[in-house]
Length: 410
Ligand code: FAD
Image (cartoon, rainbow, N blue to C red):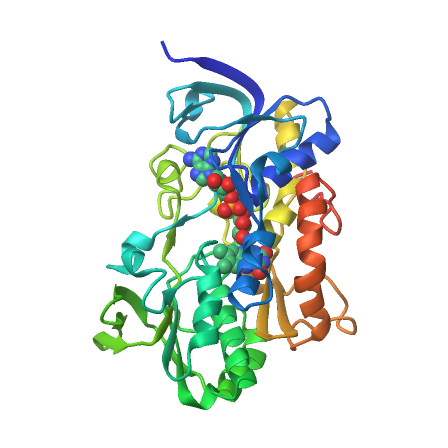
């Protein structure tokens, strides 16, 4: 018979959202029985990968051993979750262990579906094909940027949802800035081929980004989806409104399509349309199972999938999950906050911060940081402050500027 264990709180995933939520719960109840199911040996600060691809950070600065970020008071189960049986309040792990819970928090992130672009996975890491969406490849982005002298550089963006929707263009702006620095931008044809019909989803930030597109001389092509890559031939195929187009490249920065993790999509927890964990967009509680919560990229909420969103969501889930443990209703509400610091040049950032329905939610008054304009202070925030806040604040349960908002549900 399969091994069966039980913990009061079970969290699936020890990424940004899972660790932050566990720490926020333990701040409130230090002796709480929490198990975190996480197979990976390392934890990544993924927002740093844009900076690695831009030659600003070294890759190892974005990685720490999982053991070092696991809250000491939590039990780390080094396995992957394989399936959910929410009717019985249990999860089955990949080794067959059955894990029972009083309250479940689901946070396994989003799946990078490299396999949905023909030939992409095989092409990555050679022949000028790269992506900041992988730890091991972000340094290759910078290597390509440094070595390119002329030719065509293509930056692609897949259909939504993707994590950090600005990351495909951040890679491009930092590359253009480096090529200006070397005096060779005029010799490089830069193309941004974006599956979306707009440059960026929140209109207030578009004018500043458009200025950079123009100043760098970028050829902006909308409604174009990367469907195939042939690395050795240095050719990419895009589906456009007019049909398929094959383009030659010297450098291709590809961002993979992104979908719900398969074991979530296949489970009773899934939203029938998207496959993500089907949660109420304010309380983050599952719409059918009141003792289940979703947090981070794996949730069905229509916010920008970012670590910034996870930072805001984690205390809310902590408060509401503890209420569920006490057989009470949710008390805190999420406003959809997410943030995307767009690295428009080395030293300046357009700091997009917004919530549900594109409502601007700036953290600072306009006279300190006007997020719609490129600012040096925003760069300092991303390059200096945010990594420190991530490792020492968010992952440790310090809720600086993200204390839960007790809303209508209270
Ligand atoms: P993750 O941090 O991805 O963690 C998921 C965890 O779940 C992983 O540890 C994984 O091993 C584990 N897991 C997966 N499957 C299972 C399973 N079956 N069982 C148990 N565990 C499992 N955000 C920002 O706020 N600002 C930025 O500037 C920014 N830039 C980005 C740039 C890039 C290139 C990328 C890739 C991301 C960027 N992000 C940014 C997005 C941010 O990193 C994610 O939104 C954030 O990490 C989401 O946290 P998460 O915990 O939901 O997922």
